[in-house]
Length: 151
Image (cartoon, rainbow, N blue to C red; front, top):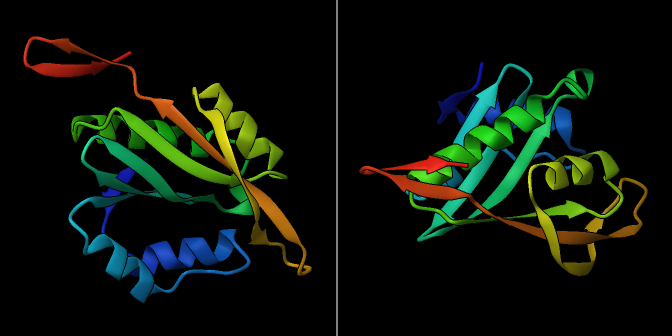
């Protein structure tokens, strides 16, 4: 089950399970104090999104290693796109390590396309540098009565 959360400790715990350089609970608390930022969490994953006017950016998305390849990231990202659309967002951006082929495949399945590359953006656990791909998608929305409906 995916639910909105402002639980910085939960997000920090999940982040630490997903990434080699975890963010602290204080970092999550500071992010979530921003009125344009929201987080969604599932038992084994999370997503944090920043909204500015009609654009949004996925700041972090993670699924614990034991729960990967079960569709959790897809559900989290789809739910975040829906919530962002409800905030008036029409474009969503994200960055991904160019060597993270499963994530890139997921993003492309959900309509994201490459728009740029940041050279040597990430540091790998062995100290090497890796490029980040910058991806974006237009959030398909249409007006139905007084509501915006996705797809």
